[in-house]
Image (cartoon, rainbow, N blue to C red; front, side, top):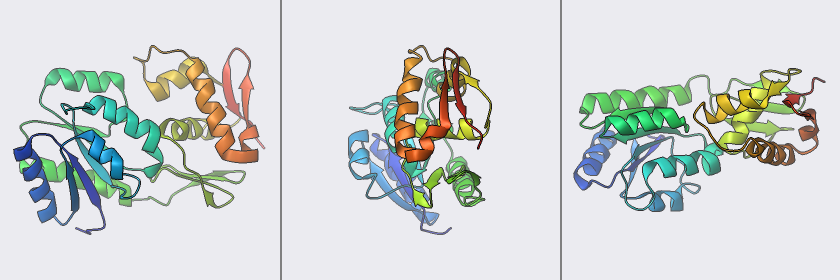
Length: 227
């Protein structure tokens, strides 16, 4: 395995943390292990991971809260997240919230299962990572979650990227608010729809003059205006 792939191992149980660290290091990955989410957040921008194994039951910031923060604030870094859980109820909560985890693995897990899950997601990062589609001077890479405007990289949050992808895959089509909420925040989202407006506003700013292509359809939703 190419050791350029760095994996974060966020687990408060020392025995499990050491087991994961040893196993993945033996497979050729670089591994950084943390016993809490706070330490993970301190270094993530300077030492970007390809994948994060994230325990749900953590001291301080719990895994679900940390998942939200990772996706909302650091989604542009393009890493996979596999949640690690010991309870069926936690799996149901994770699935229902639809917060952006790529997979989950339940304790106790086998070493072979752990390796297989991690390897599958790492392969997904490297396969077709440079396939892109373009609109005007905006270029978006769905696999690597990169966005370029006039060939300069633009850092988007997880939500901003998902909004842009949704709009770009339906150019000229009005997408109503309920559909945006369902597809990006999930069917269990109960917050205000005004949160869409806030994210759209931020997205427009980051896209510069090309942000004007995102138009508001009063009382309905948003559309990426065709050129």
